[in-house]
Length: 128
Length: 128
DNA sequence: ATACTATGACGCATGTTTACGACATAGCAA
DNA sequence: TTGCTATGTCGTAAACATGCGTCATAGTAT
Image (cartoon, rainbow over all chains, first blue to last red; front, side, top):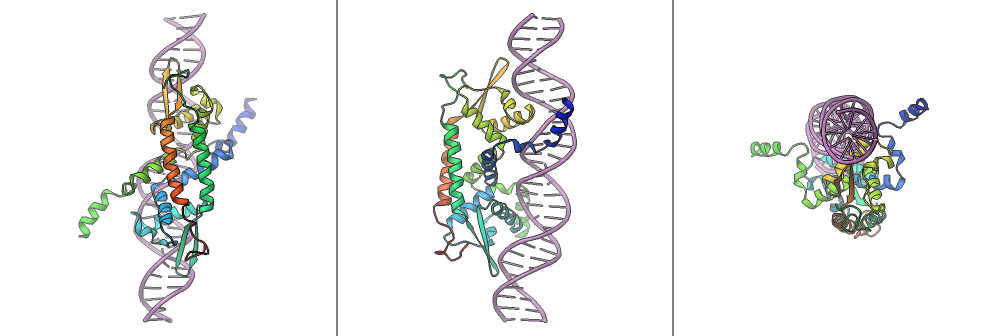
């Protein structure tokens, strides 16, 4: 019993237990992770504020090196939150507003669920 | 000029440049980071689903060790997203719904800003 | 062709997160 | 007291994130 259990356990060690969470939870966490750095929040706000897509001089507007900004751009791009099209020497990055709207709904649903009940208080069994 | 610049730069190296982003951006990123792991999303959903606050047997409902779950609880607690009150042998954890509502508004505002414009398309200078 | 510029790829150093076992503590109950 | 149970603390290993300098590539212009 414990032998087989140990073998099964071995396969699910270290970072792999994540697979046991629901797709919904993992999806939300993945997007949240993309927003979990001020630089990436700033990049999205920057792209949102420009009518036309701006190129890699995004780096010029942030207090980070071009290399680092590029890395953040890649991360957002990997989740398809932003798109990048090469146009000659420059690259035009822009928001994927369709996906952002979907994501917005996921977050809205999550927060609705989380704030639905008044949680603990004088009317519940405990009083946090 | 470049001498003083270098000194100033030295104070803001490595992870400290974060200070150059707005409070708003940092706050959003901080909360997003708290939601950036499926376990923490699951914990919040779990607490939301229970009428009464449940104790540390949260761990029993998640595919993680008690120690690891405790660590995630601490992280959420550090941001005051959840509260924990000791009641004899057990601890009652519960959501801080007031704060969650504030956070909800921050995210709503961010996504509104991000999805306001149709971004790139046939009507803009580039066509991502 | 040559030089210039905007991008992107690579590698490395440092710090942070995640996960867990082993130990410590503190209430409760026999 | 003694043992049991629910919590919390510590140390540690592995993975991941962050930041940047350096080099490679590929358009553009002279």
